[in-house]
Length: 89
Image (tube, rainbow, N blue to C red; front, side):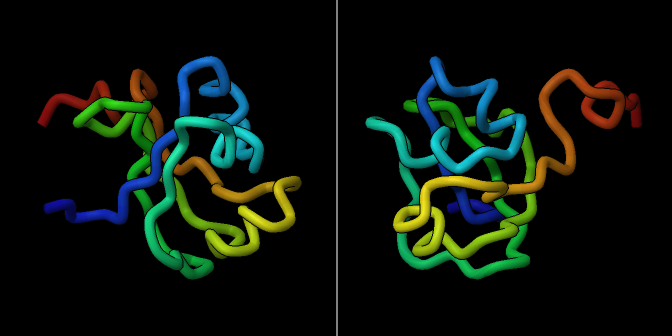
């Protein structure tokens, strides 16, 4: 069970996802289950991985990402290795 809705992408397109582009979320091996609405916070996972590599905000619904497949689909809020992930609490 996830606190955030998980979406996954394949590793060759990881850079595309971190740059917020839709093709990284629709390539073979990527996964968006169900209909995720705009403005939902999601956990961005690598294909086959258990832990998130980024947290993002849906700028398009998952249905629009699948059908339009271009533009900004997810706005990256934080990603693995940035200052927030390195914060010592």
